[in-house]
Image (cartoon, rainbow, N blue to C red; front, top):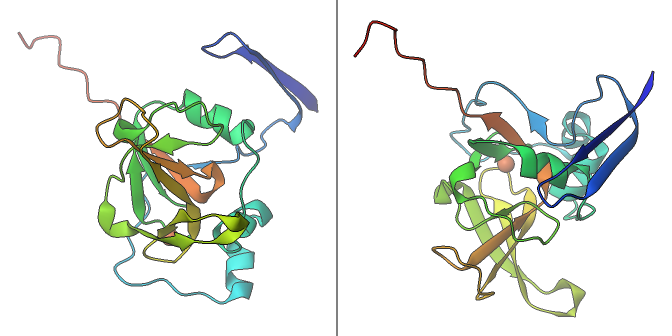
Length: 183
Ligand code: FE
Protein backbone atom coordinates (compact mmCIF):
# COMPACT_ATOMS: atom_id res chain seq x y z
CA UNK A 1 0.00 0.00 0.00
CA UNK A 2 1.39 3.41 -0.96
CA UNK A 3 1.73 5.92 1.79
CA UNK A 4 2.91 9.46 2.18
CA UNK A 5 4.77 10.72 5.21
CA UNK A 6 4.48 14.38 6.09
CA UNK A 7 6.07 16.13 8.98
CA UNK A 8 7.66 19.43 9.90
CA UNK A 9 11.33 19.47 10.67
CA UNK A 10 12.96 21.94 13.05
CA UNK A 11 12.99 24.77 10.51
CA UNK A 12 9.33 24.30 9.75
CA UNK A 13 9.82 23.08 6.20
CA UNK A 14 7.13 20.69 5.06
CA UNK A 15 8.64 17.44 4.00
CA UNK A 16 6.80 14.98 1.89
CA UNK A 17 8.10 11.52 1.22
CA UNK A 18 5.74 10.10 -1.30
CA UNK A 19 5.72 6.68 -2.81
CA UNK A 20 7.37 4.79 0.05
CA UNK A 21 6.13 1.29 0.57
CA UNK A 22 5.08 0.49 4.12
CA UNK A 23 7.98 -1.33 5.73
CA UNK A 24 10.57 0.08 3.30
CA UNK A 25 13.97 0.23 4.99
CA UNK A 26 15.28 3.74 5.61
CA UNK A 27 18.31 4.64 3.49
CA UNK A 28 20.72 4.61 6.43
CA UNK A 29 20.82 1.16 7.98
CA UNK A 30 19.77 1.18 11.63
CA UNK A 31 20.35 -1.76 13.93
CA UNK A 32 19.84 -2.14 17.69
CA UNK A 33 23.26 -3.62 18.42
CA UNK A 34 26.80 -2.66 17.36
CA UNK A 35 28.29 -4.78 14.58
CA UNK A 36 31.35 -6.92 15.39
CA UNK A 37 34.48 -4.85 14.95
CA UNK A 38 36.85 -5.91 12.16
CA UNK A 39 40.27 -6.66 13.62
CA UNK A 40 42.08 -6.66 10.29
CA UNK A 41 41.78 -5.10 6.84
CA UNK A 42 38.56 -6.18 5.18
CA UNK A 43 38.95 -7.24 1.56
CA UNK A 44 36.19 -8.49 -0.69
CA UNK A 45 35.86 -8.98 -4.42
CA UNK A 46 33.75 -6.53 -6.36
CA UNK A 47 31.18 -9.28 -6.80
CA UNK A 48 31.05 -9.81 -3.03
CA UNK A 49 30.66 -6.09 -2.38
CA UNK A 50 27.87 -5.89 -4.94
CA UNK A 51 26.12 -8.77 -3.25
CA UNK A 52 26.50 -7.34 0.25
CA UNK A 53 25.70 -3.68 -0.43
CA UNK A 54 22.64 -1.98 -1.87
CA UNK A 55 23.25 -0.43 -5.31
CA UNK A 56 23.43 3.04 -3.70
CA UNK A 57 25.83 1.87 -0.99
CA UNK A 58 28.01 0.24 -3.65
CA UNK A 59 28.02 3.38 -5.77
CA UNK A 60 29.10 5.53 -2.82
CA UNK A 61 31.41 3.20 -0.89
CA UNK A 62 33.10 1.36 -3.74
CA UNK A 63 32.85 3.87 -6.58
CA UNK A 64 33.36 7.10 -4.61
CA UNK A 65 29.90 8.31 -5.47
CA UNK A 66 28.01 11.08 -3.72
CA UNK A 67 24.44 10.75 -2.52
CA UNK A 68 21.87 13.40 -3.33
CA UNK A 69 22.06 16.30 -0.83
CA UNK A 70 19.06 17.19 1.32
CA UNK A 71 17.58 13.79 0.54
CA UNK A 72 15.76 11.23 2.64
CA UNK A 73 18.95 10.01 4.32
CA UNK A 74 19.80 13.57 5.42
CA UNK A 75 16.38 14.03 7.00
CA UNK A 76 16.78 10.65 8.69
CA UNK A 77 20.19 11.74 10.05
CA UNK A 78 18.87 15.02 11.42
CA UNK A 79 16.12 13.27 13.34
CA UNK A 80 18.33 10.60 14.91
CA UNK A 81 19.10 10.91 18.62
CA UNK A 82 22.25 9.79 20.37
CA UNK A 83 24.15 6.84 19.02
CA UNK A 84 27.12 5.58 17.08
CA UNK A 85 27.82 5.42 13.36
CA UNK A 86 29.56 2.44 11.81
CA UNK A 87 30.81 1.71 8.30
CA UNK A 88 28.02 0.19 6.24
CA UNK A 89 30.65 -1.86 4.41
CA UNK A 90 32.63 -3.51 7.19
CA UNK A 91 31.07 -2.40 10.49
CA UNK A 92 34.05 -0.43 11.79
CA UNK A 93 33.13 2.30 14.27
CA UNK A 94 33.51 5.69 12.61
CA UNK A 95 31.58 8.53 14.23
CA UNK A 96 29.54 9.37 17.30
CA UNK A 97 26.47 11.55 17.57
CA UNK A 98 28.45 13.59 20.12
CA UNK A 99 30.46 15.06 17.23
CA UNK A 100 27.48 15.49 14.93
CA UNK A 101 26.45 19.01 13.97
CA UNK A 102 24.13 20.67 11.51
CA UNK A 103 26.21 22.38 8.85
CA UNK A 104 23.14 22.88 6.62
CA UNK A 105 25.17 21.42 3.75
CA UNK A 106 22.73 18.64 2.91
CA UNK A 107 24.90 15.74 4.06
CA UNK A 108 25.57 14.29 7.52
CA UNK A 109 28.32 16.32 9.19
CA UNK A 110 30.67 15.56 12.05
CA UNK A 111 33.50 17.64 13.46
CA UNK A 112 35.68 14.71 14.53
CA UNK A 113 35.80 10.94 14.12
CA UNK A 114 34.87 9.05 17.25
CA UNK A 115 37.61 6.54 16.56
CA UNK A 116 40.38 8.03 14.46
CA UNK A 117 41.99 4.65 13.88
CA UNK A 118 39.15 3.70 11.58
CA UNK A 119 39.14 6.79 9.39
CA UNK A 120 41.86 7.70 6.92
CA UNK A 121 42.20 10.53 4.44
CA UNK A 122 43.93 11.13 1.14
CA UNK A 123 44.16 13.92 -1.41
CA UNK A 124 41.43 13.87 -4.02
CA UNK A 125 42.22 15.75 -7.24
CA UNK A 126 38.90 15.05 -8.98
CA UNK A 127 36.62 17.92 -10.00
CA UNK A 128 39.66 20.06 -10.81
CA UNK A 129 40.38 20.94 -7.19
CA UNK A 130 42.22 19.49 -4.23
CA UNK A 131 39.93 18.04 -1.63
CA UNK A 132 40.57 15.63 1.22
CA UNK A 133 38.74 12.36 0.79
CA UNK A 134 37.62 10.43 3.89
CA UNK A 135 37.74 6.65 3.76
CA UNK A 136 37.13 3.77 6.10
CA UNK A 137 40.58 2.58 7.17
CA UNK A 138 39.35 -1.00 7.54
CA UNK A 139 37.73 -1.65 4.17
CA UNK A 140 38.82 1.36 2.10
CA UNK A 141 35.23 2.41 1.50
CA UNK A 142 34.67 6.00 0.37
CA UNK A 143 32.80 7.94 3.06
CA UNK A 144 32.98 11.55 1.88
CA UNK A 145 35.34 14.51 2.30
CA UNK A 146 36.65 16.62 5.16
CA UNK A 147 36.91 20.39 4.98
CA UNK A 148 38.63 22.71 7.44
CA UNK A 149 38.67 26.38 8.20
CA UNK A 150 35.07 27.03 7.23
CA UNK A 151 34.36 28.89 10.44
CA UNK A 152 31.92 26.49 12.07
CA UNK A 153 31.61 26.94 15.82
CA UNK A 154 32.94 23.49 16.67
CA UNK A 155 36.01 22.40 18.66
CA UNK A 156 37.95 21.41 15.52
CA UNK A 157 36.59 23.65 12.73
CA UNK A 158 36.53 20.49 10.63
CA UNK A 159 33.53 19.31 8.66
CA UNK A 160 33.52 15.63 7.90
CA UNK A 161 30.93 15.68 5.12
CA UNK A 162 29.77 12.09 4.98
CA UNK A 163 27.36 10.15 2.80
CA UNK A 164 24.62 8.79 5.03
CA UNK A 165 24.20 5.58 3.06
CA UNK A 166 27.84 4.74 3.86
CA UNK A 167 26.90 4.64 7.54
CA UNK A 168 25.09 2.24 9.81
CA UNK A 169 23.44 3.79 12.88
CA UNK A 170 23.13 2.12 16.26
CA UNK A 171 21.01 4.20 18.67
CA UNK A 172 22.36 4.62 22.20
CA UNK A 173 20.65 2.36 24.67
CA UNK A 174 18.56 4.29 27.20
CA UNK A 175 20.08 4.16 30.67
CA UNK A 176 18.05 1.89 32.96
CA UNK A 177 15.54 3.67 35.17
CA UNK A 178 16.38 3.80 38.86
CA UNK A 179 14.32 1.59 41.12
CA UNK A 180 11.56 3.56 42.82
CA UNK A 181 12.98 2.70 46.26
CA UNK A 182 16.30 4.39 45.50
CA UNK A 183 16.74 7.82 47.10
FE1 FE B 1 34.58 -0.05 6.30
